[in-house]
Image (cartoon, rainbow, N blue to C red; front, side):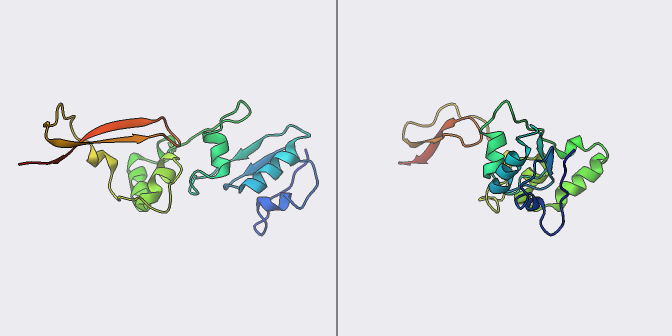
Amino acid sequence: MRTRTKSPRCGVAGIVASPATIDLVWADEEPDEGIYTECLTRTNVASGPIMCTFTPLLGISQVVRRFIIDKSDDRAVVQMTIDDALHYTPEQREQIAASYPEHECAARIKGIPTMGSGAVFPIDLDQCVIDPIDKCSDHWIKVGGIDFGWTHNSASANFGGIATRT
């Protein structure tokens, strides 16, 4: 088996300097797209796998997009949450989750790519859910919204608005 070891100084980038064929690549942090495609090139002859194990703190990068959005039969995603780490007790999991900044929790606890450097509104979305309103008064301004989706299906909603008369 042809291998190259990762050194602390050059990381996976050490592969770029080598014209060698490699049987297997395992990036234990998210590589940038140039490094990832170079790894693809180096493993082509042996049809070797590339494994990437990382927390998606860089958001929907080109590498993350390749796996989560641009799905293909030659790629797979195994998404692990803290609940899959059975060597932690439930109490330890809660303590670990509480130790992260709020804007990193989804990525670190659930493996969901971060969006930006922090939440726009630093509140739990579960606190924003209300019971459905069957009918708004006719004199209310109506507001509608639509999200065409980036990493999820599209969604739309109609909201009651501001009363125009008292």
